[in-house]
Length: 415
Ligand code: HGY
Ligand code: MN
Ligand code: MN
Image (cartoon, rainbow, N blue to C red; front, side, top):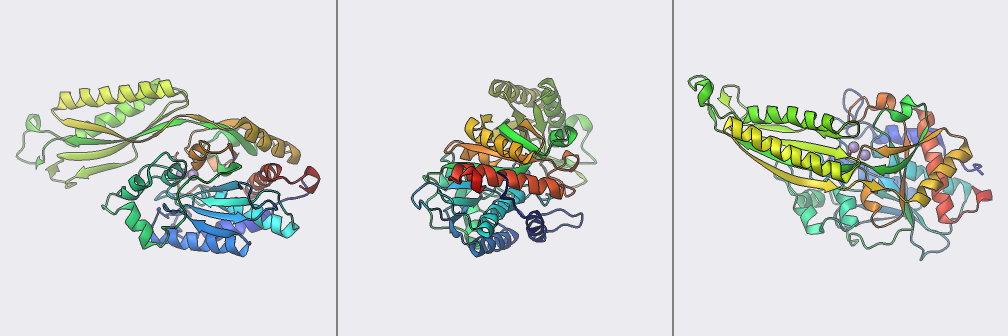
């Protein structure tokens, strides 16, 4: 076993090629969901998948499915994939690696003339990042029936553009119904986006599950006032409330250590003028924990902290949950197939829980699912400096290939 191996340099070249779409000065990628850069990337990867003999279809929220036929055309496909939308200051590997590792699996099967029993496919899920449109992982969530399609299409970005209008504008609102499609299994390759695999010097992460997550929009209301004549005690400064809540979020996450996470990543100040006391502030809060009860306790702490700060400062604060998913555990059988593949290649490996959310979280609700992690440099991601080593990129794709083949009905002697 392991006669069949991916072409690492070819995969690396595809990653570097795709990274030119939205390339940023510090070596990262800015390719927000449903922008023209997203369209260009979809066009390019779609062309590569068609050239590799796949039939490419698009569903009503823009999820793309590229399927390589198997001997049994009626069998549900073994799917791989991830996302190609990025953070505003994202990297070359987050999401893009899982899609292009899936493409490399297809290319490798073609080179070797291997016919699989079940079809094998690659999915490109729309708007995984949730940076431009909430909810996070909206495309895969709609596919899994978690979000109504109409709700996803109606979401608006900070400029007021509707998801459905942006999707139509890039020409990717497809005919395929959203969801209801049986899958044999789903395997997603991804960089860890944290420091554990690199610190433990392991090449492969056997992802057993993902932290639960809750996202909030917090709206602070005070009163716009002149920065000069307005006495300090007379002010209702919304930014002071937001600033206090930033610290409160950090403190409540530390109280849930070591696995609790709390982040404020987005703050919008109005009127955002240097000589006006801000009367309105909108801020995000991202809370995570592997234990759902602990996450619920963090939710309660957040809400009581916001209320106490608002009362003390004479402000109003509305805390609105805008996305959430419970912690999840992946399919034990699929995790074992990933483990067996890593062992067959002799790759060092480690069981790990993902701190980041992934499309696999929602696909796991409709199909047996597991993930393959590889290390990223210094554990850094959602950062233009995000980087991975070619040998790990290749190793993860080899493990993905063999996990998929084991599931797709290719005998061990042909792998
Ligand atoms: O937020 C997340 O965990 C993912 O990167 N979208
Ligand atoms: Mn990702
Ligand atoms: Mn991400």
